[in-house]
Amino acid sequence: MIGKAGEILRAGGLVAFPTETVYGLGGDALNAQSSQKIYAAKGRPSDNPLIVHIYRMEDLAPIVREIPQKAEALAKAFWPGPLTMIFEKSERVPLTTTGGLTTVAVRMPSDAIAAAMIKAAGGYVAAPSANTSGRPSPTVAKYVEEDLSGKIEMILDGGQVCIGLESTIVDLTVDPPMILRPGAITKEMLSEVVGEVSVDQTILRSDSGQAPKAPGMKYRHYAPKGDLTIIEGDRGKVCARIEALSKEAMERGLKVGIIGTDETVGNYHATSVKSAGNRADESTIAKELYRILREFDDEGMDVMYSESFDDGGIGAAIMNRLLKAAGHHIERL
Ligand code: TXA
Ligand code: MG
Image (tube, rainbow, N blue to C red):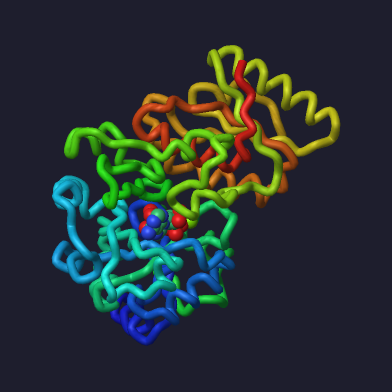
């Protein structure tokens, strides 16, 4: 399978593959035509750059202008893993891959299938998440198939991914390094290695009026078909408010979905009540969030209500994606 995938990629074709974060839609990163095919298969605007995936450190230097010391330190600490770093690109990376930018995003995934496939492909695989533009990123092969079947040459099935949210993106062309997208490698973890780290303010607020530094963050990603509202505040009040909103919407004949947690789902009544995971371990929530959003789409929910999550650790990434899915519609109690 891996050998076949490598052949397809070398010939300019597309292969979807598992990574530890979400499934990726891979093409040869150094082949401009392959990148164009990726944009077409996803229905993605071509000004939204792709991440170049490598499998070993020595392949970084040829595609970047320089490797800042802090990048070296972060690579040592977190590669292979869910961290993407932005560098000034070298001539070898086509502008189609970088959406016209002179910088390039690079990541070394830790998933064994991903690593073997990148190696078989020749070392450089451009890959966005393997979803149709605007849908939640796929965490199982079934959802890749739903979105991309017939549009790509092959899907490698590695079962459910382990993290469930896309990689942390850090810009190393500025000092201090700046987080452009929160993920499983948290701000605290990065700071421990390189000291001060800043955060693109557009990640946190929808009303800053500024363009986000990662072009993809400006699009309303992860958008479910129904209306999603996040309810934030004291836990008891949140539960009561969600239950009241659900009751009211059901009485109006709407299909209602609720995203709760293991601790609270027993209290809710709606068309469909789902637990995102366990508050004691928020990584369980990261892992299931996109699946739940997709299931609510499949079940045809008209409105959805979700509890909010703590902002620390991976919670920052969970809330970032949830806020985007909700179009920043949040009710604070
Ligand atoms: O976990 C992940 O990163 C997954 C897996 C497949 O590796 N990939 C992923 O790719 O999430 P994608 O294309 O869905 O998201 C990449 C994000 C986009 O928001 C894009 O705008 C940003 O990275 N990006 C890529 N290159 C960039 C660059 N040179 N400067 C700033 N942002 C960049
Ligand atoms: Mg994506």
